[in-house]
Image (cartoon, rainbow, N blue to C red; front, side, top):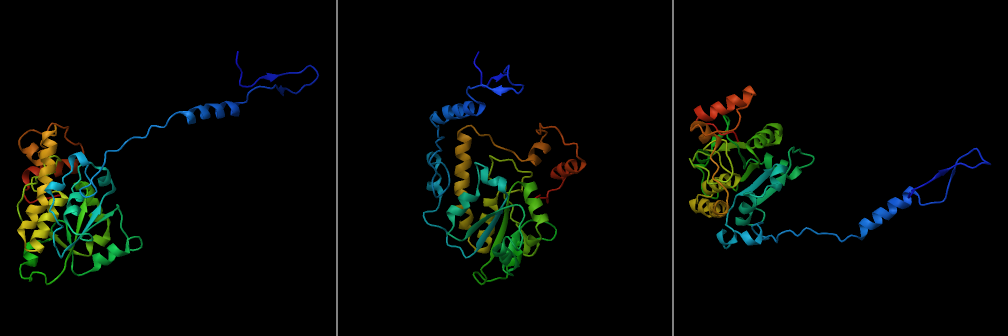
Length: 283
C-alpha cells in the first residue's frame, strides 16, 4: 500500500516517530505541479466593434450616422450596474451617435457629493433637467415652448435600468431631486420590442433620449437618426430567433399573461394599474 506518511513506534522509545516517506506537503506540491503543467485554455471573445460595441459579425455601424450628430445638449446617463452586463443594451448605440462628451455614462446605485462631485455640480446647475415622470414633473415641450432655440445649453439626466431599478435610484438619491423634473408628452409606443416593458407607454433609454433631444434641439430628424440602429438591432434579433415581447399591460389586457400572479398586495395593485390607468409610467 502506498502511504503519504507512516506513523511507527520504536521498542526503545515511548514516543512515536515519523518514518521516512513522502509528506502530505510533497504530495500537494506534486499535484499542483501536475495541474500547472496542463495547457491553459483561453476563452476567445468575439471581436467587438469599437464604435457600436457590438460583435463585429453583427455590427450596427451601417445604421449609425456617418458623423456624430451636432447637438448642444449634454446627456448624463446614470446607469445601474446590472445594465453593464446586458447583451442588448441601447446606451452604447446612443453614445455612438453623439459627439464625445455629449453622452456621459456614470455607473452606480448610490451617488453622493463626496464620491461624485462632477455629477453633483451638474445636478445643481439651473440648466439641468432630469427625465423622470411623476406628479411633480413638467412636460418638456411645455417647458421649452417659449424658449429660443440655442438660448440655453441644457444638461439632461436619464436613469438607465429596469423600471424598478430606475425608481429606486431616483427615490434613494437626493442629488436627483435637485434638477427640474420633466417628462415626455409625445405618445410613442416603444420600438424596443425584444425586451418586455411594464406598459405600452414605457420607452427604452435610447428612445427617451431621442425624443428629448429632438424637442430640446427643435429637430425631429434627431429622433429618426437615433432610432434607426435600435430598429436594426431588433430586426436582426427577430430574424435570428428572438420573439416580440409585448408589454405586461398588453398581456394582462388580452388575457395572455401566463406567469403566476404575485402574492404581494403592492405588486398586485401595480399590475391592476397597468390595466386601468393609461397615464402611468413607472419609470
